[in-house]
Image (cartoon, rainbow, N blue to C red):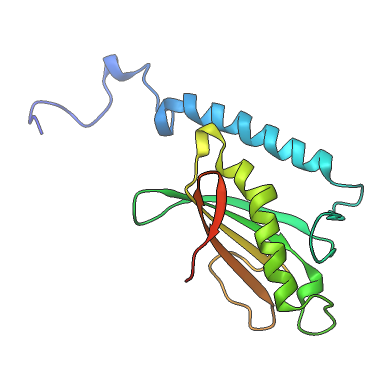
Length: 163
């Protein structure tokens, strides 16, 4: 560092402000795309907030709880889609593990692929989670039932990855 340069803002720096990640422009574009995707998803939900999921193999009602993008170790990105699915509960649930697995695959194809293809948020991996109650990401709840599906996006299709 140049010893003559001060760390305090001077007259020439008075009009400079931080504008955020990627100069702010990409963030606004991403926000518009994500907002449009969220709005489209919300408009597709019936009144009451729970998806009837007529196409869901198990027929159980679900709610989209969270969508998160993460950087992964190989330099790529993964989208994480988390759904509340009360019918997978150990006590009182009506959906067995095989039906939940079919639901994970269906959700990857119908919800994950469009999200992974967003221009400003492309993902090459998807994680789909079904949980019987909200569980904060990265925490455990021994009382909760959760199913996870990890998928690679290859040639526009969901390919399950063993983990």
